[in-house]
Image 1 (cartoon, rainbow, N blue to C red):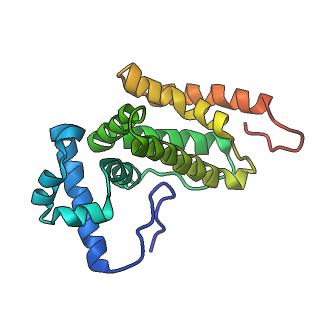
Image 2 (image 1 turned 135 degrees about the vertical axis):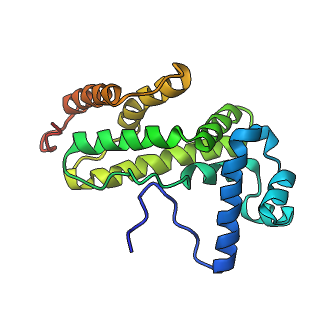
Length: 202
């Protein structure tokens, strides 16, 4: 059986029936979110559409931020997540394309924007945003392990930042050519900061 892509959270072991219920709720939430928006995705509506009780929803997701967190990190598997490799350019490029394609999914895009917008005044959303970044950072470093390269927080931000800016601020699509340019500039910065003995990234 193929392994779960590194960016997808592993389901909690337990009752298969509970896991099926959880998966069904997330599927319904992904369908509803682009239609009704984050404020319209009430637990009353979600319980009705998923045929569960609100108590069940609160047991899995005690607040809306927790639900959006799982919607983001357990998004649909698009089949394009990279595998670990020794070529830093290839891994970084494939990872950015996977990030772009994932956030381009309507439900994930809406969830990311909602968590970001609420982070300034909602502690749960702020914590979810931090955890999402930590999860993606750790996943990328896992992919980079064969190269001997591990990137810090600043280097991680320099890689994904331009893609998110193009998606959310410019409101345009980061093309493959744009991503290639971002990775080339990022590698230049990375190489300039290399310590003696660090493998070459080109």
